[in-house]
Amino acid sequence: TNTTELAAGIGKTFTLTASTDNSALLGTGKNDVYNSVVDLGVASGDTLTSGDNITANGGTDRLNIQGTGTGSPTVSGVSATRLEEIVISNLDTGVSDTLTLDAGAISGLTHLYAENSTASGEVSVTKLKSLVDGVMTDNLGDLTLGYGSIVTFGSNDIQKLLASGTNGRFIANGFETIAITTTGSSVTLADVMSTALAKITVSGDHNLTLTQ
Image (cartoon, rainbow, N blue to C red; front, side, top):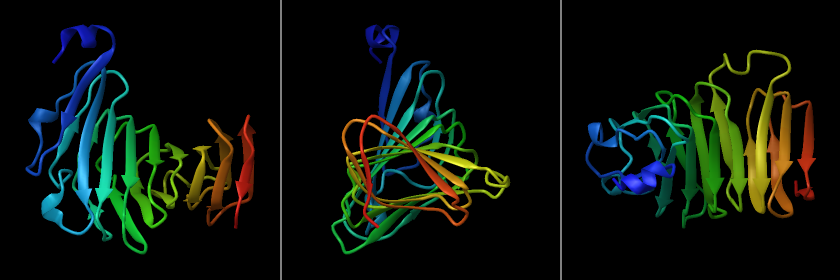
């Protein structure tokens, strides 16, 4: 660990392995980054696997997940505490494949990013334990956020989405309002969907186009 960087607020970068990662993923008190890969077709190529346990500490900590190849795997059994951000890029080269992350054992999340996925690379995160902000940046595939029923129990639930560039569909079932903020550049979304959707609100300084 570079102590000069830590003093400046920069944490440590961890690279997950194909083995079970546990005690090696103990974070610092700064902004740590955890990098992982999911082979969409061959589990033996995964570095994010069941049994991995990330113990983040202070700062704003981020897990990067990059999907490669073709296939629609579900990654489950990954646990994390005090992890604020997950960034998923599904670089699928098939027709339409979904990378699904079971977030049932992950706590502390505030933001879920889908970035730079291909048009066939869908991203789905299930069993979210608390409300998170969705973020889509030049993400041609869809992003679906799935929550436990307790999160969307009310009659005026609001899901926030920060969007930039050209993106696929955003899906968050159970929410009456999807509140979109545009940033960075003019924003295109293929669609915005929820089983309880009553209204969409838009703010920010860039135009928003819905193509469906």
